[in-house]
Length: 167
Image 1 (cartoon, rainbow, N blue to C red):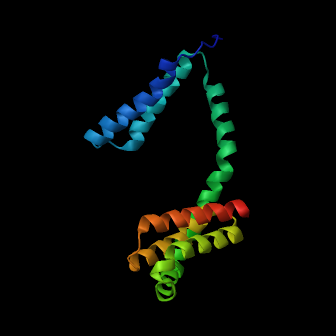
Image 2 (cartoon, rainbow, N blue to C red):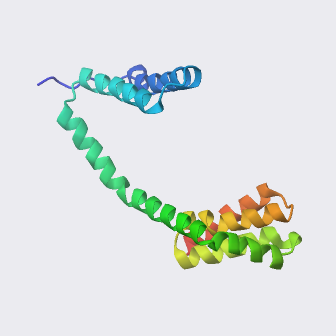
Image 3 (cartoon, rainbow, N blue to C red):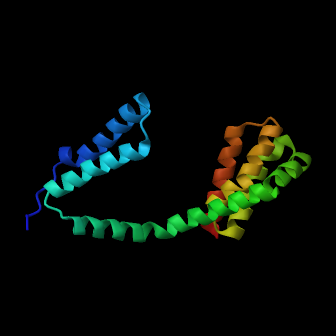
């Protein structure tokens, strides 16, 4: 069994530099598929790990440990994506835009966006879901009222995050 070597900064940056170079040149210039380029950059990272003395089992154990920690976030993203898709297909978000255009005055859209997303986020417990559903509807209302989209987006994100932290 090989002893593990000390990893220096240059060698640690090699997989990142390889990935960025492959993506910029391979995808940016030659329009190669990103999946293949990412597999090549993973092979570079694997070669560096093997050269440093790590074996396949150790690398796989590290990957499994990191994925186990990330799995709750991945599941939340899947659920929020499903909810956003269901709301779009069912017409809920277009319906909210319709009533938002009727009820919200252009001068109050920013504060209204903050308050609505705060309340929704407190009730649902998800800032991502709020921004992806009610936030999208409020952005549509702001566009329809010809109000600053940047200010409205800031209010949506702030309100969703604020409400999420309160829940």
